[in-house]
Structures are given as structure tokens and as C-alpha cells.
Length: 500
Image (cartoon, rainbow, N blue to C red; front, side, top):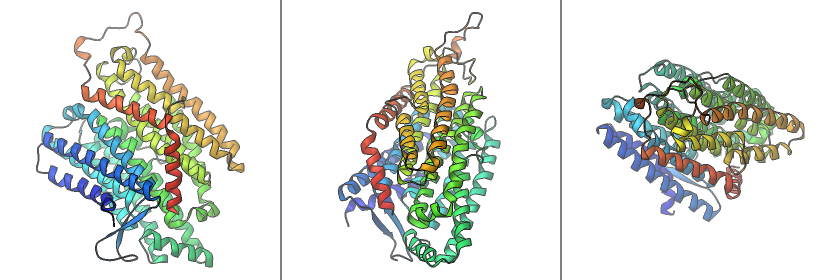
């Protein structure tokens, strides 16, 4: 075994160990430990990706002394390495960009707790990406939930506590359904490792046995993870959760957490339940209906918002709908489009939240449209960052969102029965995206009206270098996804092929 094959395990353990170490450190030292840890795991994930690209195949890493089907395993391939590396990059930039505001929003005595939650969050995300064991996945789903609640409520300001409670209730509902599905699956297959479980599922399907239990398994696992990822109509925890957390927490929660659950669901579809079985059971059509509904309803909710934080949050509901719509097309290219949009949304949504911080800083920390009028002139870089993120969500050429929508439209052509409704909903959703995002961008670049009171000097703050660097890096990441998409799409295609 090559030494590089240990790196997925090292990444998860290093992230968990950093949380333990940070528990006895003060806030600044805990922050530095987190940044170093995220940088190290980014490098390890990149080396794992390079190794899998070089070998052209995935591999399993045995945990402990017990081999399959009794032991615990990690599985790494091209898609796992690529996803882990992107998650680490977004996490690093989100922490850097919101660092100063984190220090302001969080009590100094609790600052180390914030970075402990960041460490645990990254550890759980990496585990969801790499694990080949279903019960381990459930354990880290719960760790992810606890870390998410901690990131939301640690601010203890405004509606953050009620947002955390709502998030906890919905998350536990989703976790409970997911656990019920795993329990029934274990009962009928006798396995928790993904590969042996899939062999048993295929044997049961071929024999025509346990048809109703298998349908229940597919339903409760899909709905459980859909609730946790915020698919419409299970989205009502999203606006407050994303809108009232610290900037770093908002970027992490919106850009990464829901994507970790979706990635786990995709793994279960391919490596446990069998994607063809989902298509034949019609379960995939249910996800498709919820997805296209979310694309439209999320955008309609966003149009009616005047608070920019909640508008961006409702936009996430629509974008998550895009991902489930791609999964629901029932084609291999539709799944490629869905995974690429996971990357697009992770990078773009974090860019929007971090750029918005720079706009709030020069607007008296106000978030409504009226107060943000002309903010792009007061903070040009934040204005450019927000404009690029908005144009990406609309689908402007050369940006990642354009590639996502092109892939969705192309994949729709492979599904004759769903082609027309998919193209219509794509057009409607894109129009709605343009209405609420470009309306705000135009507001940011509109000069103050006559009669508007000028902002007092103390209401206009200068953005830190760290925030500026994070915005520039997020812009670069978005451009890379938009202009160098072909190798990324090919890597996703190869990675999904390794799932089978």
C-alpha cells in the first residue's frame, strides 16, 4: 500500500484531533490551529486526488484489524478527493474572510469553542465524503449536526438561538429517518459496509424479495437526507440559520454542510441501493418533482425578501432544488450536472456571504436594500465580488453557474419525458434568479437619491486584508470552475464511474 493511501484517514483524524487540542487553547491559538489543520487537510486531499487520477481507480482503506464485511472502511477515488479538496478550500477561505467578524460576534471566552466546532465540522464533512461504512456515516451526520448548532448559537445575538433550535429539530427529524432507513437495510441485508450491502440489495432485487421494505428504505433515507440538506418543502430552517449566524458560519453552513449530506446520498444511491433500482422504483421521480418545485418556490420567496441575508438564504433553497432536479433526471449526465452544481454552489454561495459582509461594513452594518444603496462604491472589491457571485447564480458565461445550467440543459436532452419540463423550469428559475440578484446588484451600484441622509463616518468601516484576500480567492475559484470546467467535469464523470 502506498503511503498516500493513508491520507484520507489522516485528514479526518487531524481535524478531530485539532478540535481536542483547541479545547485547552485560547481563541487566537485555537484559530491558528484550525487554519493550519485546514491547510494540511487541503494538501492531503489534493495528493489523494492526484494519486487516484494517476492510478485511474478507487481504493479502500481498512480501519482496524477486521476486514470486510465486518470491519470499517474508508474508500477514496477521484470524486472523493476532488470533493474533499474543494470543501477544504472553501472552509479555509470562509474562516479567513470572516475571521475579524468572528472575533467581534463571539465572546472572547467562547472563541475557542467556535473553532472547535469548525474542526469538528470539517472532520465530519471529510468522513461523509470518504467513509465506506453506513453506521460511521450516521455517527458523523450527528457530529455534523451538533457542530452546526454550535456555530449558529454561539453568537447568542438576535434570533440565533431560535434559529439553532429550529435547525436542531429539523436535523434530528432527518437524522431519525436516516437511522430508521439504515436499521431496516441492516435487517434485510445484514451489512453496514456499502459494497457488501449493495451485493445483498442486488440479490434481493433479482429474487424479487422484500419489495416493500426496499421501497421504504429508499424513501426514508432519501427524505431524511433531503430534510437535512434543505430540499423544498423541508427548507424553513434555512433563512434564519444562514441569515443570523456569523459570516464564517453562514458561508460554511450554506456552502458546505448541505452538500455533505447530498454527497452522502449520492454515494448511497450508487454504492448501496443501486441507481438503476431507484429509477425503476420511481423514487427518483419524487426527488425530481421536489427539485423543480424548489427551483421555482425558493426563487419566489427570495424575490419577496428585503433583507439581503434572507434573500441569499432563500436562493440556496432554489439552488439545492437544481441539484435534486439533476439527480432526479435518472441519467448519468444528470448526476454529473448535479455534482458539478454542488461545487458551483459551494464556491459561489460562500462568495456571496463573504462579499456581503464587506458591503454591510460600509452601510452601518445594515442589511436591507435601501441601506445598501451605493455600497459597491463605498467598498468596490466587495461590490465586484457580490456582482460576480450574483451573475454566476444567474448563469452568466465564463462563471461556474453558466456551466451548471448548461450541463443541466444538456442532460435534460437525454431524458425525453422530462426534457420539456426541465427546460421550462430552468428558464423560469433563471429569470427569477436574474430578478432578485440583479435587482440587488443594481441597487449596490446606484448612487444615493436626493434627500437620503449621508452615512456618518463611524458607520463606514474599512474591510480587513483577510476579507479582501478571501473575496479575491473566491472570485478566482469561481472563474476556474467556469473557464476550466472540462477537466473537472471529466473528473466527476470518472469518479461516478468508480462508484459503481
